[in-house]
Length: 414
Length: 109
Figure (spheres, rainbow over the protein chains, first blue to last red):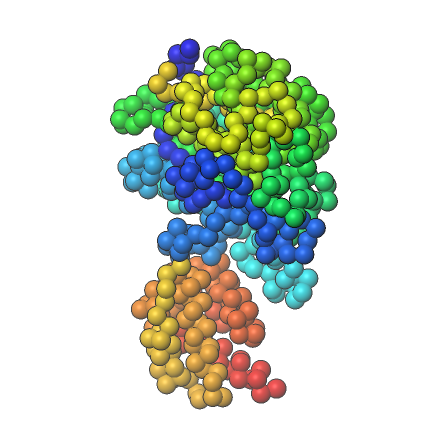
């Protein structure tokens, strides 16, 4: 197995808000149940696709931003701030307290950022003219504001930025944050992804391009990664934030890592704006780069946390990629079966779930997938969680634009 | 969101407390309640600090918040709020009085 290389960083804190639950533990328990969170969505009523995966009701305490700041934040920013607080507390830091803020970086990706607010304010503008447009539109809209408000909330004064690679944005954030740590630009990185763009216009846009499942009669059965009868993804919202540190720093604080982020690989299809290159030909180089970066051979990979969107094209290309590069048959899961596709948040959510999979020695099942409807020669986990001692795993993220990001995670116990 | 205590806060903003001219019956309590609820619910201002002589700046409202406050009150009450009518130095009583006058005028048309 691997030795901890100097290019490895430790994941010491996790914060999650997903359709499976509010908080890290609720999300993990929900994902282990292997049931889809998709349901009819009152905000999408009477649209061609009228269902989604929403974050469940949050109590006022769970939703509390506090300090009289919530009014100026877009919903994607609120989710990021709440997830970042959970991650930082989980890593054992007091918010804004016991760290050198100048050495803390924040990198938060989002695909559509404040599109929901632009949609709402556009409607007001068309109805009543410029005087009805909210003064907060721009701060609620711009995609870097999740990183900005998280940094402000935490007193993090190191480098900060947003990553935008569509449905790979959250994974890009983790790759960039790891590089910031490895370059010495920071000592702690707070990194992840966030999305809150389940709106009538955005959902219709995805539907019009043919990306969404149209299983309106049975929403909970709609997201079915790698199933023969899959017909598209289910739009979702959520956020995940990870705290990254150098392993020696984490050890000096007496913190145990959930997992190590050992390698990252990034490539671009340069093939088509929205369709993946057939067979995952260029995604393969991202996977191989991640493995090489982590000092791993393909045969070392025990587990794949797949992008698995439930679209015909993605799952086909990704299954080909896994079967070709990892022919020894690592276990495969695809969280979008349970959570839907939270776009720019998904890559970070799935990296966090991969870390929890390694930490707990348990692989969550793919919702709506059975051995009978599995379309590919993959060892997909179905039905129930599978106990497995995962020493090394990869998580795939692919975004419109042809962006491929693969993260390699290893067990801190290895 | 913090829960406000609307009864107490509204009482503090009656026309008598504000020294406002007596407008049409019903407008003042409604305006007072709207100001209080926007300040407490949207901006999370403590109900105790919403006193008639409190300036908006003293309630921690910055310029972006003032612009957003004006729009929120406009949405709530259906009357226009000019930028000059909700400044950092404007007091709660002045803002409320302006809104009451505006609403009374609008209602009389």
